Image (cartoon, rainbow, N blue to C red; front, side, top):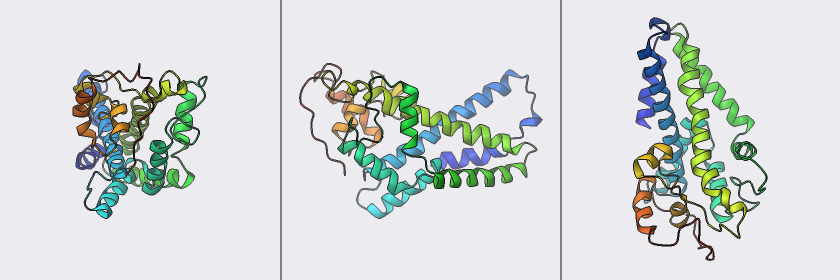
Length: 248
């Protein structure tokens, strides 16, 4: 959260007109800045997600929810309670019609699933708050650089869009797509990624079977849980009855 705030404050003041657009260093720096902002943006949602499970500050639930609200508010002006309710349904009714993150139709492609996924989180009120926040940031940025609106577009809007795709692809679509054929894949899949790549991909959200089996684990504890689970049958081949998990 601190990295997100500090990077935003620094990048909003970057005068893009003062550099040479043809310079490879400029484009490399711009690319790395967008990538870093995207990872930090996704990290905000992960913090909010852990708060939904009560593991961010477990012994103080009020403080836990307060921090989660701040994280989701900074992420995309998302309402914490509504997101928590949706995520509770995702864990209680995984891969069913009552799962807001799941598209039950085997014929639906990734684009249709992404549209349904986003519709479960976007509201007119949330969009209004988000646009109002970007407008305020644009006004601040324009007071520091001639094209401040472009800074907001590149370092706020684009990272949010990329982050939503990152969360969808690695945290929803790839782990759950096999469950549209429950007779073949009754469980969520875990992506076969080494820990360093799993971290870069989506803060270990790709170890999704482990998350559903042990939702009380924080995001950084999932690699160890993945190592402990490797001795069992692969989630891609498992045909055992679904294990019960409790959302807390």
